[in-house]
Amino acid sequence: MGRVSRLVVAAAATALLAPAIAVTSASSASAAPSVTILSPADGATASGSVDVTVTATSPYGTLAASVYVYLEQADRATEVPCPAPLSRTCSVTTTLDLVQITGGTYALGAALRDNNLGTTFAQPLSITVVNDSGSITIESPVEGATLSGVVQTTVTATLGPSAPIASLEGAWIQVRDGGRLDQSQQCNGLADPTTCSVTVPWDTRWDDGPHVLSAALGAGYPQPLLGLVSRRVPVVVANPPATIDLTAPAPGGVVTGITAVLTHSAIPAALGTTPEHVELDVDGFSVGKTSCAPSTDGTCDATTMWDTDGLAGAHVLEPVLVDSVGHRIPGTPTTVYVHTVPVVSLVLPASHAGSTVAAQVIAKASDGQPLKYTPVTVTIAPAVGPATVLHLTTTRAGGARFSFPATTNARVTADLAAGVWWEATRKVAAAAVIAPFRCTWTRTVKPGTYASGTCTVPYIGSGTPVSMQMRRGAAWPKIGSGRTGRHYFRFRVLSKSRGIYYIRFALYYTRYYTRSISQSLRLVFR
Image (cartoon, rainbow, N blue to C red; front, side, top):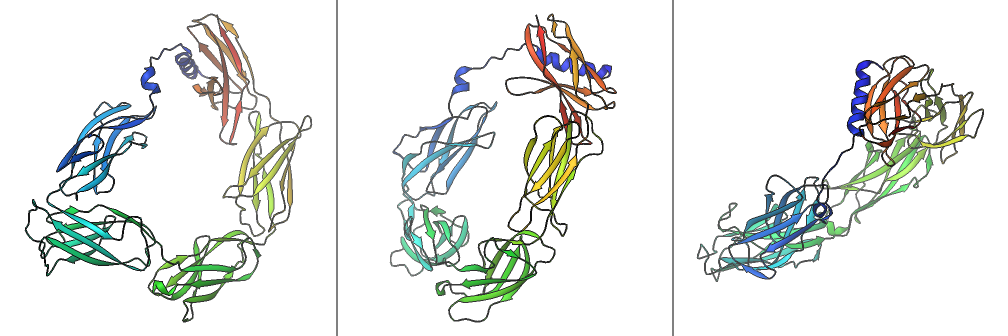
């Protein structure tokens, strides 16, 4: 190791070996994450707006970034950044606008977002909103209802004594699903100009899943004048499903040559469409499309031919039904196997450096395709001593890397056990001889002086990367780095305090994908 490298290693070791003192607040370090709404009080009444004060503590090791305040059943929320400089604690006060919220009881919530994108929630409080300008309410469906088919959504709007308009005649009521505008209807021919009730049809037949309905009152379309919004109503849509099943080949089946893939599809009459065609995807790529014959019961039996030539191995088949209006209904993916005879090979480097051998085992099908995620057993049997057994899994590219201590005349065997669609195979190779990694060093020195040493590694040329590591518990963090001379490198370690330290060195042979680790060196400063 040259002069500059020696100083780099020594300086880095000195900086990390020197004693250090850190002062940490025990109370702040041990405080559990929490979010608390200090005001308003639980059960409070508010009109127009409400001032909300929140105090929060982020999880240990993070910083409080912002506080999010919201009404759970209404479209009202605001996010307030925590004041700088950021710390684990944060207290904010914000005003939540209630002018356009229909009167009623709501849950007031708060959440803390930290700098690690984590979220901590507060226990919600109950507040009652009073709004004299009016109200808008979804009468049906009710909260938590399960819906199907075409649903009639009924909404009633009423003007209050402080409303900015005297009549709802000509006003629009908008029904929304989440943040998406679904339907609007105008108030016309009202017997009572201060009250309007409308019914809006909602076709849920191809919209299964959870939904949140809300309504808004406006004096013109599409721009609301009042902007009064209703309490949100969560519902679930569950229609009888359209289905497509792959009936052949069976899951886990072994196929070869031109294979017939059979499917059975059905669309319930309540969904209002008919089967159009069936598509077949293999490993995410479309390989064929078969048209459905006209039927009166909404069913379709289709046969798609799949050419498996050159596709040895496991494959995922997924049928897709397309209906008369373009809806796509995916079937359950099915794994099948195309028969083949595999080949296992071992790749050892022509020459080595260091005390380990880096190798690779590759499994391929007879057509040359790599076998993905295939278990292989590798056995390293040295001339002297017990054998080492490695259980590996090939990667997507078909190979798996491994390393083992170098010995004389080691016999390396790779075994691929018989599977559903392949026969057992074996490959044998011989390992090379690698000289050991040895170090001599000064074991005991006085504080303020250098402990030094020399490590020899035969067959290593100049410039090989080397790093110095120091044991801390079970870990070996890096404390210095440099490059070797020809077949050796030198090191120095300085500590200004008494103590016992353990260091080791790691050599990196990127050409052979290996790393050699020296023995642990014990240094005593006293």
